[in-house]
Image (cartoon, rainbow, N blue to C red):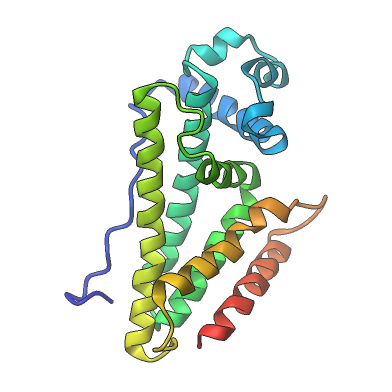
Length: 221
């Protein structure tokens, strides 16, 4: 808990202005398809042509909403971050010791990655290619904004870790920044190696998330 007994405000990603329902569904379909392409082929290997082909649509349908491949990538990244923030914030707002809340936050993070693997793989890609492919000032600003949101997202974990040190549930001698980076690094890596198996249930995914997090939290007690 922070010094004024109020938990920090989670980062927010503004959503596009309200569109007619049909437009919103169309954008969602494009993002789902693009996320799959970026996940499978990476940023460089993906083209608007390929996204359109898989979508069974014309390139014009995609360009109606996104001016370029980079803009499309950025919106997939934003959506991936929205899903992570929503899940982790819900876990952060629960009651309990700092350690128990940190565990729930990390498990929510891991489970969200597994349930949204294509989107979250793009988030990881975005961290590594920050500004590498931004060709306009607006795109560079968008990448910078996403990186700042990422830092604010990480700060949620750091603040909770500090609460755990204060209440005695987490090691007082641990460096919070290093501990959180190690925890998040282990969880984020699942976006690289995890691939859902046919018929795999949410309970199985939840068990995997618990195992990943337990290995990290054990050393922080």
